[in-house]
Image (cartoon, rainbow, N blue to C red; front, top):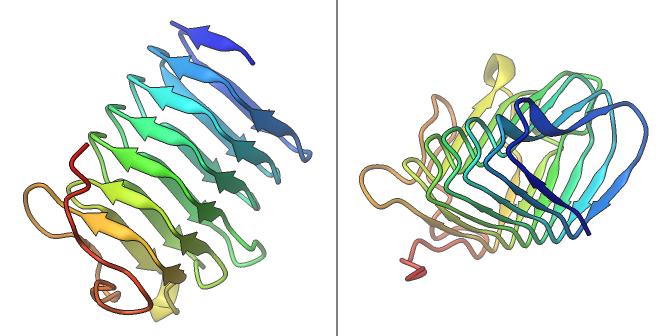
Length: 173
């Protein structure tokens, strides 16, 4: 594993390919992991105290983001802009809390994205903005909790709490 501390840019920038990023501590950087036209698998990382989003994707990025701890970043925990030609991110078994923006923010053509079995604490916990009135992503078996305000913030996506195994309970971090 690596410890990346204090980088003046994103700690890891991915431009293409299918890298496997595992077991890193990323902290006190300008940003965590940025992805562009790539399909990485990002597993078991601690991403904390960065000055922007912890993880963000743009343009045909089909990331698998699995079992990470994402805390206390000044931006969103995970942010993704999904074009019509991409599957978008699959977010599985992550713990996301204390970030300055939404815990999870997805926009664009997000109907193929998946948000499964995550614990997300944020204000809001999720912000989902499907393009052109499209369908929301698959959202199942998550704990989506807001410390102050709405659990969800979006225009056309309704509350997922109480549907498909999603709950809203303080995880007491």
